[in-house]
Length: 260
Image (cartoon, rainbow, N blue to C red; front, side, top):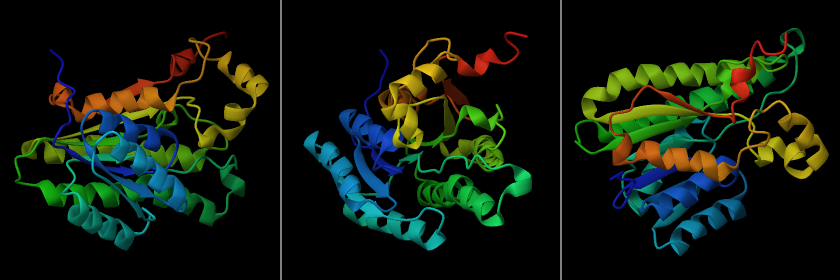
């Protein structure tokens, strides 16, 4: 039997107000976990995501935080701890998309914005998560939502590619450091997923169809499909998996070297 039951577990989900993060909130709650929803600016969306979890019979709380700010992350963990308990599942889903600006033309502020959110934010959340759980003996999991662009580069994406590459290496390094505590650390690397981050593809079918011609499965992925992988990696069924990346891209990243 595959054990995907998360009853009694508590999840901390960044970027939980939309896209992959919101899908993870719903999927984790459906599997039995209570959930802390971390949102950036959209309070209504954060509360709506938490309401889905409560509607499934779970405890949930939504908290505003900028994960690139250390004190915001510390405060969010404190608030969730008081409201529903100490998290033993961490989903780092919050992130910003690539700028499309070449390195030679990229302002320092743009570079730093991606590194601070997509990489340093995961460092802040992971550090506090591990500090809370070291020596507890509890089954615990960190899941970083990275990207196929951590290893497959795109011109104009140096900010994003570098941040996601760093996040992947953070995943691997941390997995070695916390294995003795029974904490697993893994990554999910999505390709083209229909979320607000891919707004044009989400709302323009002709544009989406043009892009999906490059995907062997000939379609974009859904946030719920990524969330399903997250539930598995957080569950007892994946307790012997750590330091790994699960790619979910319809085969897109396998197209390297094809056609020439």
